[in-house]
Length: 452
Image (cartoon, rainbow, N blue to C red; front, side):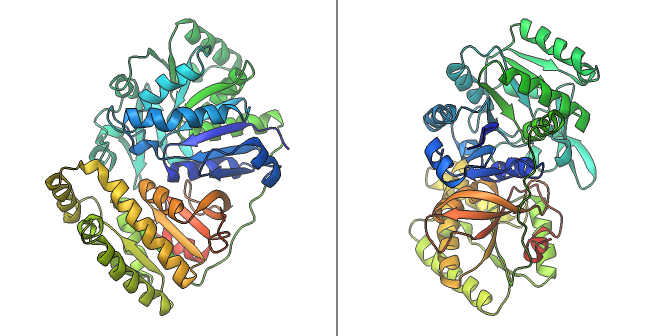
């Protein structure tokens, strides 16, 4: 078995796929597992992989739930003996003290790696149009780069709206750990000076070192810093797929073997799209797909999550979808037509009326969409599926009994088409694309259909 270079845990499923793509596209064979694997399983089934990913759901959990979920997984990850363990977060860093707390993860990491001097944190990923400058985070949308607290989507995220762009201040709402910044001016130095500056930052007794990043040159230097720290014993890092891009750039420059090429995929006869996303990006993608002959089926969300009605609603949706698939059409099942869909506020009001928090929407809707997807794929022998939305992706893959994913073909940065590994014969080999709300070109669903 090849030596593992990196083990990472993704705080949602689409983000986990994003990281797998970052590594695979750079020639490092990576498999994403739905549960933490052991060395024996890797040696028997995937002896030539270089990186291991574990897809999670912690972005939707409270701090107490995160502790119960993550501690045993982190302990299992340690047993894989890779030099680096990475907790992968969304490149928009969306989190809060109550849900998906990145601060809580940093505190757990300090427990598991008490001798580690500081935990590197990197949010930026230039290939995804995410940048951090003097601690403030930016994201591009429709050709415009927004500070995160003014971003049209992230400032209005239904669960974790980003009201602060300075990631130091954002993290301080979640943890009391000391945070220092490695800024763009520090990164402008030559590599030797960059390493010296990092050591000086460590001598400041900071618990966390937050990295700026503006371009690929910055990423390569950051990758060099992080990899060098792993030479002193297993290290923990936190960040977006920028971590993978940074490490891959450094590994390639250092001559580490990177010759893996994904097998690719051609056009499909039809595709099933399941969307639990309310992003305007996804809204536009649905609109474009409908213009290209896809059939749209709108989900009555309140009915689907109401325990007294959900079985009947799911049955009706199943019949609608199967009818369209039988006619040879590609079908999009979607829960919202963008962030202003009245269905969103109606769902929140319903949950409040039954004593539940609006943050439960992702779980309740995801579970039902997962079951619906499983039933449709089984009945209609669908070969290619797309899932939009991080929470939805997690529940759909769980219902399909998938234990692993591997990139078949890049379609859009952060949202590749993958091959599924499953115990059940029906779902083993299924082609699946998972995308977060913000990712993909306007014609992304059409591209997945055609495999380009």
